[in-house]
Image 1: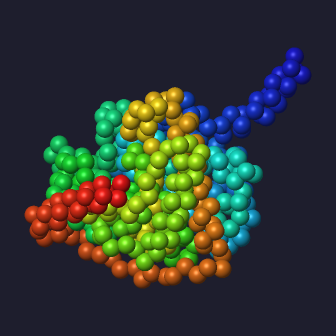
Image 2: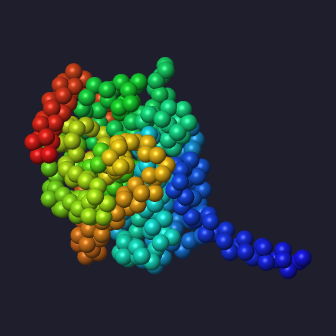
Image 3: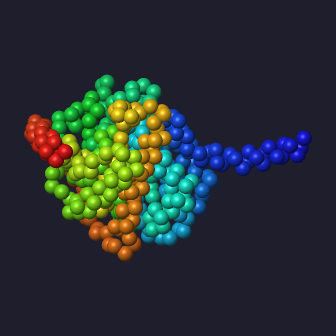
Length: 373
């Protein structure tokens, strides 16, 4: 009896770590599920994984980041920073982030090239309050859950960054709108966490690529969003984006369009995409993943049967972006330092003027998109 019991204990101790680090893709993870998965990886791979409690939301949920390395502990390695689920209803984005984490950690051997000269920091669930509210109360919910007064809740985290904050369209100033930019730039803890992570990486000279996962416009965006002028290295970012979108098409037949973000939706301030480039990341992308399945457009809520396929498809693009980032920015290439200037956190003085500018730029973007598309 004792021998049998010992055998059972030994068996459980052998299989339990694998079970804990297995990524289950038959349903969308809860907030608790995401946190538990990160913790299990940190426990199982302590030499290559560091999970950090990086802040708390309005509803006191923990914001966790995971840093992934190859374990060599070399100082000064360059970094890729990726976040997901800044918008609550985009349920596929944390699943895609977890899939990428799983590939880098559990399937390290086949992806070791991405960690030879680079480390990764991933924030797989950037808006946990909104995500849980979307899953349990109002699936179309987009913002976080900070109170704005009266019956209005939530700030759009991807409008809360200090770059042309509040510029664009009238809804950015409406506390009851899903586009509400907040009472001031960086009013929200979730946006401040992303900002602070960016600043650390830029200040120590390691930040190379910022990547934010969204759904489901099937696009690969580069800056600027708030300005039609291309960035100084627009051609380099377009080359990298095309490399990734061509890889996705070759392996999955899904068409993802690379473009400067302005020419998709017109002028829009306060985005993490623009802020990352503004403060010094030479590469900054938004990957608007696909919500298509067998010709049907599911947008934010693909059926559970499609989670694995879409997560794997997203990894094709994420991996390709990383490959090119590693190629373009080897350790010997200097990353220019960008002086950090704090913009005004006050709303623009004339909302009517901003609305007119936003409307005109949106019309321009529409025309350009259809002329080139």
